[in-house]
Length: 478
Ligand code: NAD
Image (cartoon, rainbow, N blue to C red):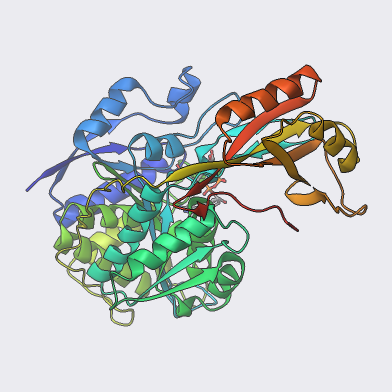
């Protein structure tokens, strides 16, 4: 069955690598027709800061499958990254990047590497909610949701199951971020229990990243929150051989976008030099996603054979290993000439016939019992002695509330602070109720009292328990 997709040729090397990719798809018999839209630099510079028109959005939403070449995001000027907004507008929550080494044909320190990074794509610090709160302190909100965790972690296990992978590893920093990364890890443990035949493990991200860079052969599928996944998927692609060889899939419940992981490489544009492999890998992931499994396999095996035959673009060309340095178009022609061949030395691929993952929709859980148990008042205060601030604040509280502690950048400075601790002008002051009668009205009163004595409250954060479990972190040193 023919699938109608949307394509965008993008900027820089985009048009060349897209033409090469489409030529391979056509020669392999991919059953697709496409609508082409304009996105990127030209659209930005015409005054559209989003880089895409409403009509183009309509085409993407109608066709649901989008193959996108890299685009140039102009620096500054309020331009928004179209990549980030496309992922979020279309709910493309899963970013999948297979990173496999092609030793000895492509130079790598890790000849045995076949890792798939599954990156959460919509939340975490990428919510982009940032505020300057005091002269000295800005903040960025890290948002992690249970639906976000469940969707991406289930995706990772389903992916592993369907693709015959043996292990799913989770990377977080939940020894420090016990609420946000703690939730990701907890959901990982819950979902892992539903897949007892797949091995699972959790690593703290710092040592996990070091192991990934040193011994990638230890890993199979790795699932991570957004920021860690962004960084480590580039690391994984680079140590496998080159970021120029990797493609990625961005998958949502309705739509999906496929692309190369590299950018528009403007300096290489228009010279028939660029390696089209990254976008071609994106297209192979797309073919699997739309159920054209045999075509995907055929192209991947022909590509592996081309690499193995030493027909290389400049970026992976190496004297003694490569046989022929070719341009973008000639590389595509070499793949086309091998469409009925398989690699002889590298392992040929054979994709599962049911590679299209069908995940259940997230179901909201029953509400937990939520209890208000205190408040953090964030204060912009230019002083340096926390005891002095504590004295002012204590004069503000009614008998229902007591000042429990003050922290500065998370470290407890009152009571019993250290004189050595460096303090900024940003203070978090935690109040706890003295009895059971505590309500939000007491918080409003506290806020009003602070305003009356010109204490600059910059924000309030209510403290809750959920089914009796603490819904906030303690101060460091508390
Ligand atoms: P880049 O990935 O475009 O280029 C980095 C280096 O890799 C360059 O030296 C280039 O020569 C080389 N390279 C990249 N792809 C190659 C290929 N296919 N074949 C051969 N060599 C290749 O990164 P950059 O220079 O930081 O970014 C350029 C532009 O691309 C920026 O405007 C950036 O915003 C954008 N960008 C877009 C995407 C996307 O559309 N998904 C992703 C990253 C960067």
